[in-house]
Amino acid sequence: MKKNIFKQYGLYLVIGCMLFTSCEDALDTKIYSDMTPENFFKTEGDIKSGVTGLYVPCTTNWGYSDGGTGSWYNALFNADTNAYLAAGFYSTDEGLAYGEGNVYENFTIGPASGGALNNTYNVIRFVARCTDIINQIAKSPVSDAVKDHYTAEVKTLRAYYMFALLDWFGPVNVKLDPSTLGDNTILPRPDLATYVGYIESDLNDAVASSNFPDKYNGDNANWGHMSKAIAYGIQMKLYLHQKNWNKVKTATEKLMTMGFSLLPNYEDVFNNARNNEQIWAIPSNTASDNYFVTEILPADFKKGYNLNNTPYIRGDEKVFISGWQVYCMRWDFYDTFQNTDKRKKSMLERYTTQSGELKTRTVMRGAIPLKFTNTQFALYGIQKEQPIIRYAEVLLSYAEAENQLNGPTTNAVNAAALVTERANVSIPDAAKAGKQAFDDFLLAERGRELYFEGQRRQDLIRHGKYISGAVSRGKNAQDFNVLYPIPQYVIIESNKIVKQNEGYTN
Image (cartoon, rainbow, N blue to C red; front, side, top):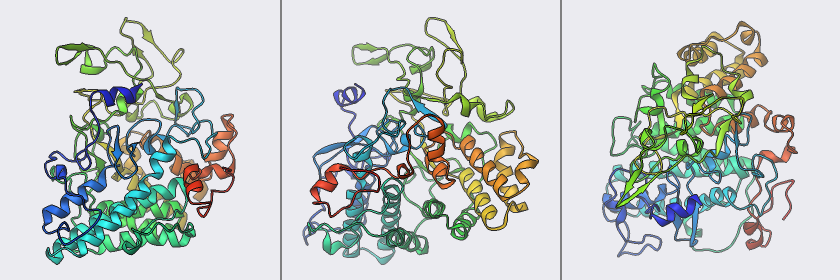
């Protein structure tokens, strides 16, 4: 139903237009997929237009129509159940989806499940497109400095797409050699070490570039573009995934010298654009809404769109819109927050309905993880950027790496304490007693600090508690469910050259 609404009112994403404030360059109709002397990148503007189109999956808006496949896909950072971001929290101990029979929450997903499987797997095509753009940049007559800048940007974006695929599916047969882009030969999936090496290589090249900007927090026109800080942030995520603690520590220590800091007030992190805690956030504006709050508000919530339940005026039509109540926070998870924890201000355990009825946890399935507490609804969503990597995660990741290497050292405890002290809570003495105790504390604290930011699945898998936690909730989760299945169409079209993940059958 929701998809039909957005299609009806034309809220499709124009390729390259969904991320930035101005879209004029993105509306260029040149096609760069077949490079010839007539259409290759002649100017920096040509390069920027081509690079902008690579960001299509990176939006809070509903999704995009991919001309390469003729299909429509949910964007990675949309809040829909069929998006990459949301599956990172509602298949875990922190959140649940209201819809019955959700295959991710119930661990019943299979190769033919479609939905988020196909949406996320489709970024493999953008890996190939990044490869194409990198090749075209190399052949452009622009200066070496311009080439170096945009090549580093595209390699960072390609690295993230490859990481997202690794996170869900394990190694996949990405195309990184431009000479193979026109070749339909299907290659087997690489081994893990080789694939991780692909991501590492791109990120190492990016951070080595002297022409790649450190960050864009003060630059509205370029906010949301890849930067050197984002490249270090993706390194951090990759090495956490691989439990390469020395390299996690190196990446986080680099980020700790780049001028980022925690905001004094937790709520401001999500309400203030381009703030100094955000390393990578997905911009949102009236042309590209963020639907997170829409997805979690109850349908009978008194203060919803326009904050006072007045109608949204569309032409001559008055439209009353309600929340969709797709997700909530599990009460067991909510109760892990201390009463003094200031982060609880960004969630609700009771609310007043449009008819004036007070609803409390006795009738609510879970708490409302509002997150964005200062909301303005121009259309169906809010105009608030979605955090992907922020400095609090860096501090907690540094603490985890330092603990794994040396135990709960003073440096590890102090880094974590910066996060807890802002929340007005302290680290219990028992958590500092040993490596395992501090590791357990950090997992719990990452959940509280980064709640509903799509991190929880990765964290639980890394700590070996994703499957056991699901089993404790009554799910028939198996060890192989730490990866999702390769979509069935991929296996069929490859004539089984692409092998399915262990535990799944086609």
